[in-house]
Length: 199
Image (cartoon, rainbow, N blue to C red):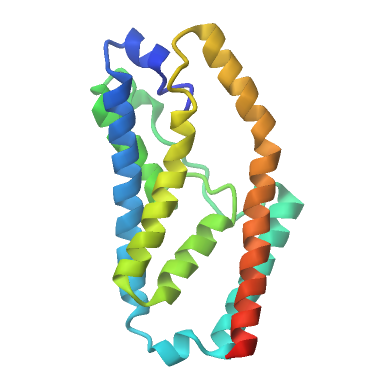
């Protein structure tokens, strides 16, 4: 996706990278907030005492550990997901901002494209267990903005050489990013266990 939306690519199509990127970020944030509102609202149908009960917290911690194991063992290939990507046919067919908005909406939803880490599912669980639409929306906002961050990395890729350098740099960050995602799952599991133990 990053190779599709870049200053170099947008200029070649007569589009504004800034406008396309802004539409992408807005779409990603809006879609993720929507998911958070829905899941937080659904969670509110279950009482606080149930959502914060020891069995529910134990199940959450277990799911986080299972997710961590899946991510470590499979490198993202064993994560339950489908193989759908955003439609590259949109590029050049629609205005840049339409493509950016469409790509952002799909990636912000999270579940309509390939899921490569169980952290996506952990976000959904967190939104659900907040039991508050506004808390789910906040978690979704953070998720949507984080999903959009990689696009900022190509903002200065105005030549083929610079775009190649950006991708080389991104490759070097893949392993550290995986470690952060895995650490977040592990730390979250520990926090949930401690919270459950302290009651």
